[in-house]
Each structure stands twice: as C-alpha cells, then as structure tokens.
Amino acid sequence: MINNVVLVGRLTRDPDLRTTESGISVATFTLAVDRQFSNSQGEREADFINCVVWRKAAENLANFTSKGSLIGVQGRIQTRSYDNKEGQRVYVTEVVVDSFSFLESRRSRENKPVASNNFSTTNNVPTEEPKQDPFADTGKTIEISEDDLPF
Image (tube, rainbow, N blue to C red; front, side, top):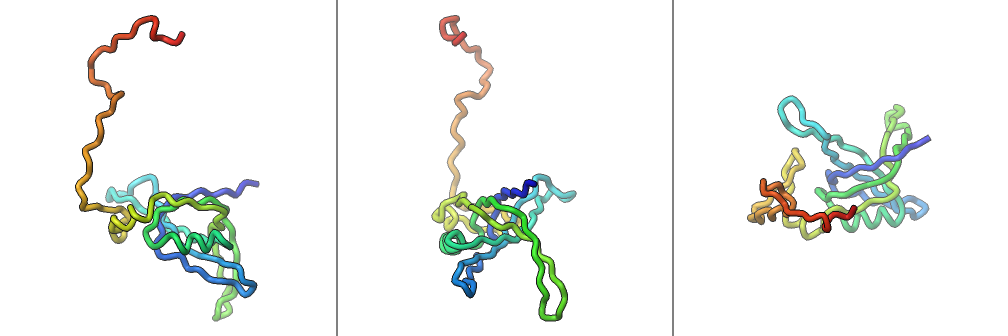
C-alpha cells in the first residue's frame, strides 16, 4: 500500500514544541495549503492540514520557522484516537512528517508582512521590472544555416 503525502504551504502559527516523558521532541503545527482552483467569488481557498514531526527535525522546525513560514513537507497520513476529559472518543487524522524543506529565507520572510485570512503576501518595496525573455517571439525571422543544425 502507498501512503505518501507531499505538501507546500504556510504555517498558521508557530510550531508547538514539546518533549515526551521519555525525552523525545515532538512538534505539532498546521499548514495552510492553497487549493488549485478559485471558489465562486473568485477567491482561492486553503485547506488547513494538521502535522506532527518528531525528534531532531521537530527541534529544527521549531527553531527555524514561525507563523507564516513557507515550507514543504513529505510524510504520511496517520489516524489515531483518544478519550477526552468527558470520556468521548476523539479521532485525529494528521500528517506525520518525515522530512521538510525551507522554501524561503528567514530574511525574505521578515521583509514581507503576511496578509490576514487570505495567505497572500504583499510587499511595499518597489519591484524590479521583469527581465526581457531572450526566447520570446518577437516576430522577426531567425537566420539558421544547415551547418548550425545538430542533425
């Protein structure tokens, strides 16, 4: 059976780092992942995926990311259940993260304020004009001799 998950999204809050009684680090976090399509109002919606990461990776995630960080995770979906204080059975589905990657530098994240609720970022710094595409179709003919062809 295959159980493999790959997600790219932004942390909705700082990772919650804890240590088990046996001394193992565990961090939980929620990843906001934009959907590929827009809703009927033309807005992009997001799914909020609960994740858990263990050991040294948990410590690294907690130390080097914060709310709004863009990360990629690879792991598997896992379900578990427990009885809450009222004695009711609670079922939890989460992604157990095997590895993660930072997808932006801390410096670039600190220079961009995160907009609330829509997870898009805005930057008041003037942007550079896009560089001219050297392969864009300009409408001009290109002179190629038979000697230039590889076949």
